[in-house]
Image (cartoon, rainbow, N blue to C red; front, side, top):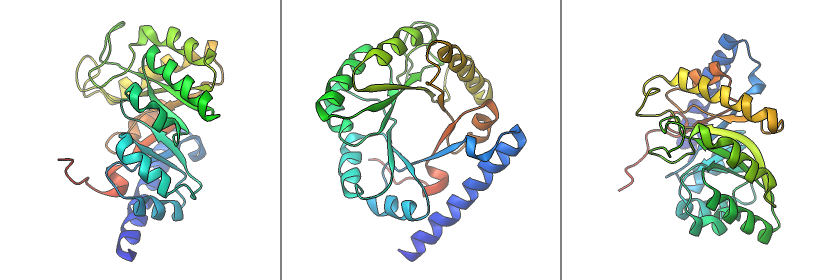
Length: 239
């Protein structure tokens, strides 16, 4: 475990250096950017080590992996983010541990999240996942609401009992006009965030950027970056 702790500590330090350098280059303060470590496919023991190293935000994308891991780590001072595409039949389980769901992209999901949050007596933060490969009215290849659907969905979340509208999230698109243009994609997300905050001023969270493109996300103005591989290493095969 000492070797793994040393590995994670070293990787975490390198990511921290990258975020700090990106903030300096963008003229931003380091505290403006929150690191979320994506712990999917990695064991609870790694989450525990990360907590000991000062990580406070972790993310998962599959409920069947996340639920037992979150239960095993329930004594730790962590904020759990759910970042994967979420089916309504998994909502009750996810609401049991997730503090924020970053992949809200349809009204049916909002209804299910609200119902289960109320049932559990919890307030769940919601980010609308924006599909920048979807044109104005379709859904993206990896989920997400089109830019033209943000306003309606945001109003729905804001009015839903048990939910809190926190902001927007995107994954850099693999197709369409933003493919391979992460900085431009993230700048587009920031413009959409500005529009959202006119109606919902408190929804100021912008989650963008991963291991390969966190610098572009920080430069664009993201408040949260989701980093997995750069901290935990190359993931084992998912079968």
